[in-house]
Image (cartoon, rainbow, N blue to C red):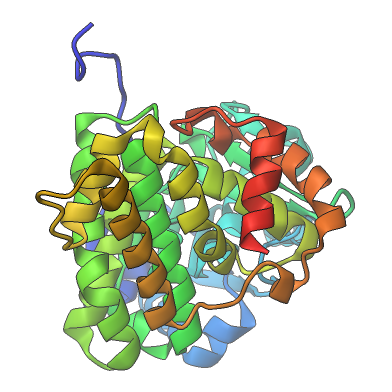
Length: 386
């Protein structure tokens, strides 16, 4: 069958993008019929003032709410279940979440459990969520995770030291209120890590075996925006135009990967994050160039297109040199963004790699990687990243 004619679906929530979008939470919660709202956030976002902007909006709309902020980075199973207990005790009927990927994924977990009446761990995998969640409104405050538009929820299970991936159209939010102004309180390192996460989303979606013309469109636009704006936004944190381009790049990458899924970088990053509670964006950044090098031969024309969109002129270069140019550019971008640590520097040892590789091999994201790796291939990629 000709490429482009395979069956593909494309799923996206309603989203409102622009300065001040966060202040529309009350209006949309009311439109969705909410009477008692569980607002899910975290202490850092509360301190930055973004949570109050949202709760003020709910109050202005005459809606009552209860706040849940007992969430740590890489949201844990027990945090989800504590949120469910509060949601049920307060008789809530709608979720609003303000924050990065951790509060958003936790809110998704709360929604899943509150209507499906089982433990969050029972939903691991693809299409395991049978009943719709309560209405969910997301207000992202980082330019990277795109949890606000995706059909993914990633939850950490500290008992097993793994992250589980829940992938279902049931976890796509009803509405995302995407406000670039919220990025102005991110520190440079968080900006770098989340931005490189978004870039990884775009690259992996573009070479995914489940890609389509629709996901390609969003992946390439994300790469164009992020390549031009991420490093300048780190150096000029108050420039709203740059922050807007990064946030739009994150949104475009989210629309791409939510539908094309991802690849080995994310599968391996999930394994690391689950075992060592590391920052997800940093894990992706550490691994990205090594995985590109591994995957390049499986889809050279796609990686060349990625290089071109990132601003590289590859004309006249032999294939080997094109690959080198792309890898050099990605490594320079990481260095300019200030993400320079290795896996060894974040606490990974050689003795960990066999177990991490096993977990990565079983991650749903590995299924759409353009090159099928063996367990030993994954171990070598981890070794190269030490």
